Amino acid sequence: MKPLLSLLAGAVLAGTIEAAPVKVIFDTDMANDCDDAGALAVLHALADLGEAEILAIVTNRKDPSNASAAAADAINSWYGRGDIPIGTDKDGATGGARKGRPSAYCAALRDEFPHDAKPDDAMPDALAVYREVLSRQEDGSVVICSVGALSNLEDLLRADPELVEAKVKHLYVMGGGFPRTARPETNIKLDPAAAVTVTNEWPTPVVWQGYEVGAAMTNGPELIATPEKNPVRRAYELRLHHDRPSLEIGKPNHDLATVLLAVRGAQEEYWNVVEGGRVVFDSDGHSQWNTDWKKRHQYVRIKGDPRALAGVLGELLAAPPASSR
Image (cartoon, rainbow, N blue to C red; front, side, top):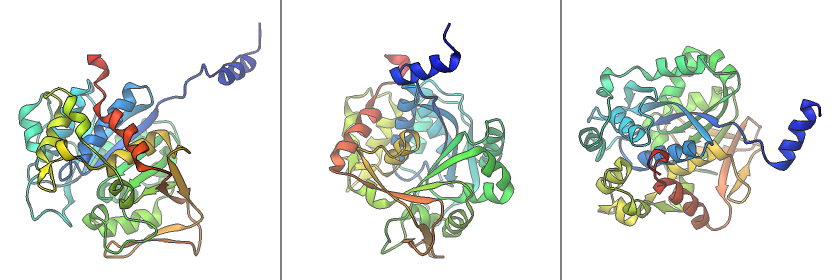
């Protein structure tokens, strides 16, 4: 009988041992843009492929519809994962909000699709969900994917920095713009103080994806061929882009790309990685990459034609739930 280590080494060389799913907490401003719904769809598609395990979803923006959690839960339920824990930020970020207007799609997803979530203000608190879920995981095993305000992450750092350092492997952030922004990017503008705190104090490696990445490519029309009972399709139908449904003309896929990064990492064929510096935010939310000294920061740029990456994202976005195949 061969020794176990020899068997394992042979299996690895033969490609017969699959990598363990990446454990992901998805921190989203599920309210304004439909790419949050699209990003959650991509995350579920990756989970269906065995590449991701969705530990929890937390929302970081207080929307007048009071239905961000319900929208997320409707999407979870469509993919057969209606039991994923969801938490909400009760005093969620409002900076840069669309003048108090409710989400174009969250209430519709709440009212038109199956789910069992309560109104946002009656859901578990995001910080409590973070602490409970992280405490149950192995050290250095969790990836956090943030595609909105950094308010929840600041709260977590303030409440339990040791838990963050122990349990989180990487933080992936859609926010800012690199190497610098001319004006504050939306996610950072939602809560600039939180962005400063997280950038300066987060104890694990951080990978930043700036606004310019998603702005270079779009997704959405791929969903036209999916069933009308797909809540993600409905979100893209209701959210307008240039006065037309995003379902028809597409929407910049900022958040979709961040989810793919968080699960698959910076795949060499799609990404260039910049390191050897640090991200800096000022109090107004402007971002810049500085090389005066090195932190555990990186930012990514698209390698080659953005349409190649958009094609991968589109396939995942429109993939049917595993339970319906």
